[in-house]
Image 1 (tube, helix red, strand yellow):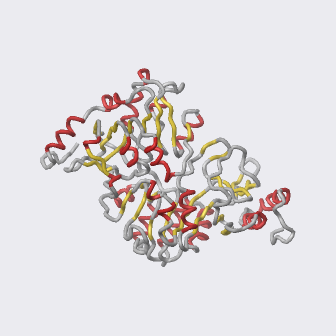
Image 2 (image 1 turned 90 degrees about the vertical axis):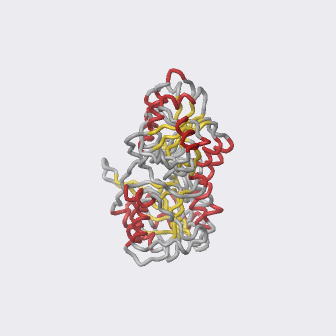
Length: 456
């Protein structure tokens, strides 16, 4: 790797060289029964995963933890019996849904702001993480993936760093930096393709209609949290073309949409109560344009989830607008965003964190969005995403008592402080027209439909 060897402090450089090993040697630190944390989201520790897989027959019951892995782990592929490696994940990705279908990964239920505390109370034995090359003060930068990584390296017994030259250098608090003195081994990765470049999810026509309803609720000076999906991305596009001004950002995910809004002059971060002038995010995920934007940008700071997602912190900003997608919502307002029955699709993530915080923010709004229905190709009929009851086994991501705004392509309603019959009427009003009669009948059977309801 192309290091500034001549200018680097000799003591740090000597320590670095003493810890520089191959991936095969580095993974020798793992013992049977260890809890091992892998690199996450767009910074997976691919070389260490491959090397650890080679040790399969030497190890038993290694408990692997990750979050939203975007590759099918070699440690899992090599051990279908799961006698040697057990994969456990906080938030499922598309790849992990495939791993789940194969019976090769298990979900760890969570709310995201609590995960750092998980690691403090039960530290990992070994943490694998990705980082930028070491600077002349002996520090690695942990780049675009905050999550709980600061707490992991703070408490871990052993730390192994994969060094990648192409990783963006991202500013933030002390949790963004790792000193060579705390590291057991360093593995340099040549010709690295990290961070992973993930395409922007394009909005469908329905996503665009949903986004149009949402943008009407966004005022000058609002503080944004956009979730994952076509609707949040299109919200960003509409804002970029609008005259909304002085927006702030305190978000879990920093995506390309924020760059587009910033370049259009919509984001200044100057009306925020906390971290004025700064983008605050937990991780960045997107295209090369996004990674170029965050690299050595003093306006972008990445924090761990116990700061970005803690409702007590988030709600201190005024006009927090949290926009998150879901899979289904029932007629009482229970939101499911992570499973269909027992099939895990995602994790709770930060939805509850930000939805709760937005309600308690002065002038804030927590918004849950979804298409009203999906078209069944076999029958040609629409199947409502607003349902009489969630499928047995489905995880409730947001209880009805916390649900505020819900929006489909047919409009937006606020469920807060509404009784069961008022909620039923509101949700039916934004359901797909072809599904409304069935929902009304279900509401009547549940005794939550009044004769005076406007929709009949």
